[in-house]
Length: 213
Image (cartoon, rainbow, N blue to C red):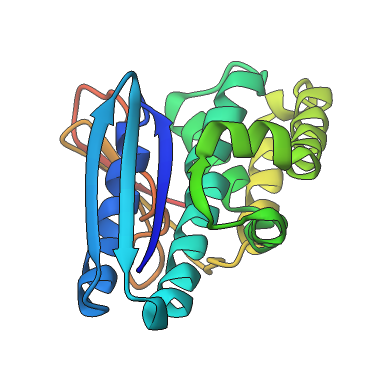
């Protein structure tokens, strides 16, 4: 029997929920077990399966962990370090989401290079101590954005950069539909598929309306 667990700080409820919900069906299809519990300020998600299913499950678990690091943790990193010029909330939100998605495949490659699914993976420790090259890459991205924050005060310059980022991410689309509804923001592509489906897309707005860019 193969067993593995991933542990994270208790405030990362959205990360834990994403991992659990994403992998639950896959684990059950492999006749394995997945469970979660909270203890001493940590959320723990435990996986178990027969040895012959290990390769199948480790692929999906590694992929999901890489995804949450390159999405949830990257957004937390940007929120903490990005010094953004005075812009509308919607503009800040969309720009940050574009940065999260920008060069994501390289980000995931760097995570997968160091990930090791033996015993327990402590998410925060893995990020801070094993993924220095990834953090350096994100720091460079933040530095470029911060160094050009004055340039971004111009609406034309800001839109040019935003279009460049969107054109160069894996989810690039000719049209982006930004829907503000019930105090939430939903960003859709030209086929009305959720662009940022991997993270919670919400912000505080008092009225419901829609914009198209």
